[in-house]
Image (cartoon, rainbow, N blue to C red; front, side, top):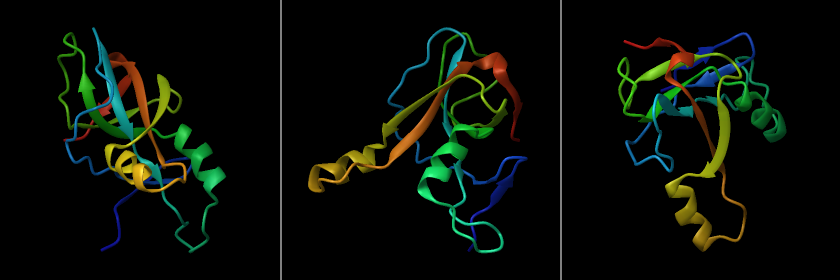
Length: 128
């Protein structure tokens, strides 16, 4: 089955399937941590997107899954799929738990996962 694509003005993104593993960051006050969706590896026409272009497009992701919320955030929950401004918040890159395990066995650099720390007020919509 083809992954569900989210089309934005910038690119097409695959919806992040979060396995409910704990976030490497803990949000404080009215902040949230979002695991951003990843750009599709190929266009609808079958043209593959280079790794460098994928990294650049991932910075502009506008959707993702909430993985941590601060105690003052009342209008969303962990696991909600949200939409936000293209460059809202601060982007952090960190290897996922699964990639860290692979890195112990392999000398290559693990793939980095993009997280975004932002105020809960920067979220424009929550998927229902």
